[in-house]
Length: 144
Image 1 (cartoon, rainbow, N blue to C red):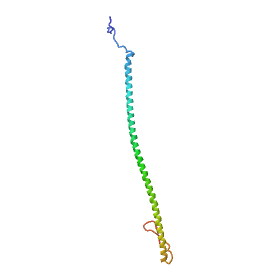
Image 2: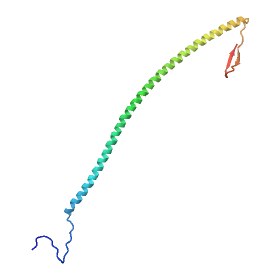
Image 3: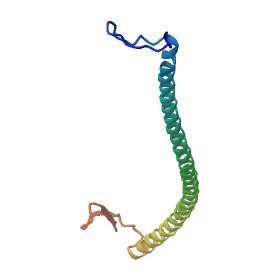
Image 4: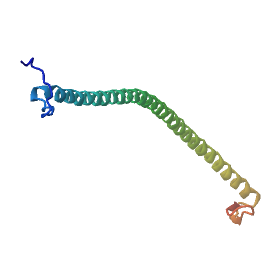
């Protein structure tokens, strides 16, 4: 009687029979699990890379935002200085213009007075001015 075990006989050799489909399923599931695990690892690495990039972008936004605010402040201060300069320039030009007008008026009065005195000394005749080239420049000088 047989106890259910395989025993080789002299006329037969024992060969392994192919594993049934049910016994191959765990190997296939293990391969799928490994593939899914690799995909999850890749996704986790991508997510970590994205998070790092996002943190760097936020830090840059904050840094550049602060720089933009600083530059805005510098620009505002520069505009204020320019306004102050324009006001000072306008005041100077107006004051200088008035001073020149007054000086020319005084100079004109002196010229008229000198003409009158010159006429007295020369018998009532005014002398004609003569244009003489100036020696140290290309300008000419009006001489009486």
